[in-house]
Length: 361
Ligand SMILES: C[S@@+](CC[C@H](N)C(=O)[O-])C[C@H]1O[C@@H](n2cnc3c(N)ncnc32)[C@H](O)[C@@H]1O
Picture (cartoon, rainbow, N blue to C red):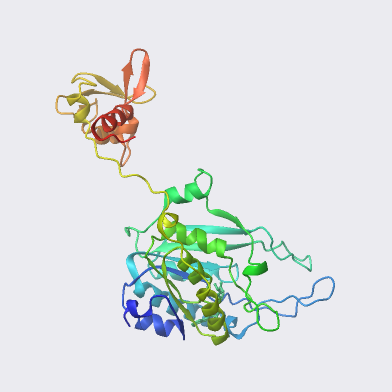
């Protein structure tokens, strides 16, 4: 099955079957919210004796943990086949299943980038008072191999978080109010509808406009709703026709954002400046001395822009790494020169050259 034929559609079928038929390496990102296998026992009552609407649907029941593991292995293998080499996978789960999913996913060769805690700001209380309020779910973010060039919109995440680096604990409410899909009786259509805010962060972090996002456990279509809004393509697979119907209606009512609105903050690609340019611009001279910020390590600048210390010679990066016994070093940030009595980082000189030559700030 060609991915272009299923782009922006919801397929009412079994996701393992469908993923096995989809073109190999054809999707950029997979978001999976699989059955949690909650194995709820007795009916749970609130203090006022009303029944708590848990997850007791047939799709969440497995006859044993072994059966759940087998199922997990099958869908994760199918997901890996259909994912592009530089794509990424997100899986969400709770303590019921996430450890098993993580173990199987690692055994299949996936490489974990982060586990993210979704800290629910409005969790359901533990009505019986028998254990801690279960107030979070865990997301695993993984790639197909450690060298994969996955998308991470770092600057956009920082912008979304008021210019502070985004951390792996996300405080977001559960899905309530108008966002929650209802059936004709006014009851929740789906027991585990995820909030759009969660998918917004995930897709903004790890996709580019035009990417294809696959959700093999589509439910009410939260992933599709956010993907469509953000100008990404979706492919949803869901077995239950009533959820498919709800998701289709939901998606029909969404308009994608366009133009400038779809843009996000990216790191500007700065023109490359070799260290030798500092000599050519007469900012430093062959024979001048560079030191680290504390003045503990030093090296002399040679005529070709290489430098030499007591223990190494080569580029500013190679000698910086050798001085620290490190695998790598950004020499521009490591080395300083004396300007009067002050030590100044050589990166300041690079900035001046960029401004002078390219008008870059
Ligand atoms: C945890 S829910 C996903 C909820 C969804 N993220 C949302 O926001 O509405 C899991 C969904 O996967 C569906 N499902 C379970 N096994 C499936 C399978 N093998 N193929 C397709 N859908 C499946 C269930 O019907 C259920 O709607």
